[in-house]
Amino acid sequence: MANFNYNQLNVVGRDKDSVVWYRNVLTKELTNLKDKVSPESAAFKKVVQVANEVWSGDDKDLFIKNLTASATEFAGSIDLVKMNIVRYFGQDLSDFDQLQKATTNISSKKY
Image 1 (cartoon, rainbow, N blue to C red):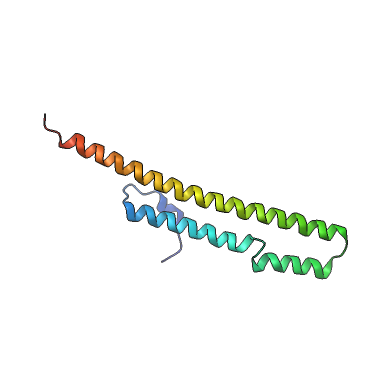
Image 2 (image 1 turned 90 degrees about the horizontal axis):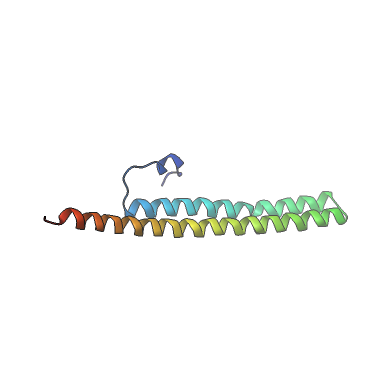
């Protein structure tokens, strides 16, 4: 599957498969971001390694401590956004299905 194009969110019609696809692509993008910025990531560990190699003292330790706290908080925020996306798309799909059922019921009534 190709990279996600955020302009694809500007669609007029939709169906369950499309909504699930949007949800999956967005959450995958967020997972990729988290994998790059979390304290467990290779990039983060490299920053800490370089800091340890070229820096010494309490200010280095404080830098690493603050950087770790910030990365942990950011990774947690990414998890929260992912959870909200899953919840939003699920609720949106449910609401849309209910609207379609109500519209079908109204349009099929004989007067």
